[in-house]
Amino acid sequence: MDRKLKHWELALMFGVLVAVVAGGWLGREQQELADSVVRFHVIANSDSEEDQALKLAVRDRVLARAEELYPQEATLEQAKAALEGHLNLLADAGREVVEEQGYDYPVSAQVEDCWFPTKEYEGFSLPAGNYTALRIVIGEGEGQNWWCVAFPPLCLGAASETVDQALEAGHFTPEQGALVTGDGEGYVLKFKAMEWLGEVQGLFQK
Image (cartoon, rainbow, N blue to C red; front, side):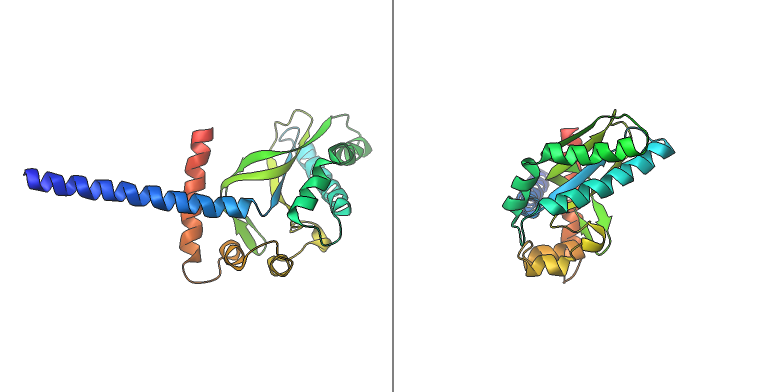
């Protein structure tokens, strides 16, 4: 009986050790990916149909204005500095849309660390976790969110880069590109594991 108990305890300790090591490794991989992008987060005033439509209009204007701020062939650091140095300009871009549509909501812009759930976009996905983000809040900021990527410019309409173009520009490593597109053997499993780890971390943060 004692011998069986010891074997059970060893198996449990080994499982915990594997989980800790794998969690640390996956956490580093997610952090390296997070350190390669600036997310974009827009929060509507409310969930009314009008406020949700306004959110999307603000999104388009702010993304277009952000694109104009990036130096040609910008690095991540240059793009982040451009955003941080022009937060008032980006907030003004959002307020322009609000006023044009007959509202008087305030609009704020910040670059800050935010937790994001797993999100799937056209041609790529990003696992849950903490990311640096350009965050736009409209009015009370009590409505549904809209998430995407401000840099590399993967969500800028006609001006959007593809993941392949981001790879060519050096914004992603080949491993990161394979991860977010789900290409390559084992990458789907790794992505799911990173997704699970990010969701667990988000629960603790909340």
